[in-house]
Image (tube, rainbow over the protein chains, first blue to last red):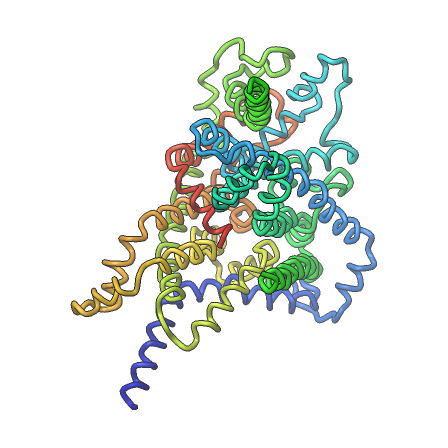
Length: 295
Length: 277
């Protein structure tokens, strides 16, 4: 009995010892910051003078400012524009690329490249492509007699430019994940359908699409979160402008924290971002469980 | 029969047409970046041709001289390698514990780890910045790599992999008198080579491309990474300096591109395995 207890205790110690090198950084740089940023959001603090407790005043000020609502709408707007294109486009491309031929591998490698190359570097390229005077885009459009457009300097086009660059970056990733999903479906199922005389469209609609739906769902969640958190592209192309029309929550919180030093106010903004993403995660968990029960 | 054949040909042509158009759209910024990086500064204002009139190779050394890029490269390489080293210590151990060890608090700890995945790192930058400032650690390599010391992606990937290793294999080694650490080191890790390669590559790339946090936590020029260094060079009003910016951009993506082209298999493995659980 005692020996058993000692063994259990030893197992416990060994297990914790294996986990602790990863646990410590998570506690310090992920869990503690969540708590601290909740605390900070109830204070007024500028990193120089002492912190001052202000209760819910940061939130009151935040929610009564039109800026936060516009920014939340923009954050969601990016998701609503970018997701349909990358998901539908990615699914469609994966249908064309699911074979293991050399040409498929070539194309999917190329499509995936923007996902791994530095967005600072590639955004500076896009910045130049969109340049009103000597950018490649206006030069190209001039052939058709289009007068030069100030792509990034007017709110009517800047938002779409950012969406476009993000789609350019993400579509290859979605394609690759869908290919993984399709290759997981047993070829027997598809062959059986072919023998039954199903047309290509019927096979895609009634077999392929339902069978990759777990992949679709996972991508939907992942893409939503990634688009909500995007920073580099916006920061590089417009930094939220003109007139904050392209600003999302990350740009806003960074601006208030590190340009204006309103730490408490900025913490309240980061808590909003955190809660929004948390809600998506909880929604995902709930739905995943439901799907599992159904099966 | 001929009808079926012609449908197949039409399908094949349409497929290639779509694939090539998309490939074109994806590749344009890269092609344009490389071509324009060789242009004469004044050439940039001349409309028309994509191909530079004169190939100006000096743009590259001149771009590197615009800022202390040598130093930025050293910083980026050092922080990326340190990130990889840190993740190689923290992630396999945790992944192994969650996959193969049996202990009471395992479930509880695993849930904590899962919860941290729900926290967007962007919402922790303020608190983390204050932590670094209070430790007087801003402008250090440690500050730059701090949020990447461990990676849930890597822990998950390794946990999945370790689960596929049969217990019998580990038990056999234990019967031969090996300690748990020896089993982990000599039996488990060698089997996980390809999974380890995947996490090394992902760790390196994510650290190399990191931008928001390294920018916040470095203020001294000599502590900047290549990404932050490039950011300070970019200014839409630069005009004739643009070819040099593009030269610098080309150089910055080169290491990752080389890794990507050479080790594609591991990128694909990382993306498809973790995604599908």
